[in-house]
Image 1 (cartoon, rainbow, N blue to C red):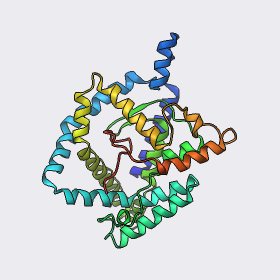
Image 2: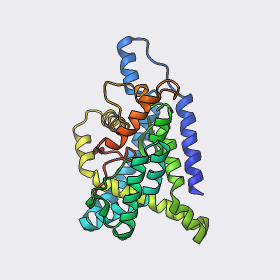
Image 3: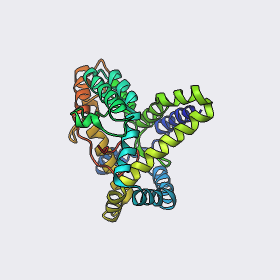
Image 4: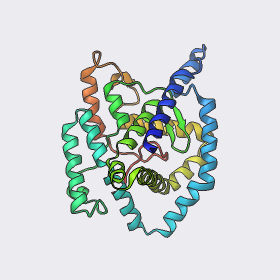
Length: 289
């Protein structure tokens, strides 16, 4: 199944990230910059980034422009709402795994309201009822459990990430309940088509919303790769409740025996952190209501 491929792909990325890191420079200033960027695989990442740029110019950007031009705004909102609602069971599971029972209950209520009164998620009635959207993914779960971030990675097509979030993306994709439902009723082929369609629709929806932001970022950057790396990493840190002056170990990367109380505070901060607009497909961007 496609979900098994995603899991294997993410595991391969994790191994690559752990084994192919470059040696840090000896010069103190260069070493500080090296550690701040957390990009020991920069030469490989830049090659993948250039490949992604070509794919974006040829395929993704034109498709996103066409989608935004011919599909009315209200219809785009409906598509975004359906995609978001379909992933709520996975978010609820991740919130539970992180010990965020209040957030899990809130997600469950949103899913129930939007799936019924909201006509299968087409209308975001949950937000109208003050049930705010809550961020919870398996990359966050691994963070709360103490898994290290690993080096910065640029994934083919998916864009900015790291080994921990790559594994998280694969697990979240494989855990989507609708893939199993379609598999039971239509077989493996139907399940694979659903997964491909779901990921494709989500990518198209996100890319269309970041057309202007990405263009502005690229035009205003001397080094688009470095700028996108900085923005995406800052956004992810904010989602995890990590302040710029703090180390990840202060908010959850330390083993449970070392800093359990700090990891508990981080779990609360995840849901309290407002979503930011980040022009990167793989950086968990802000959702439309």
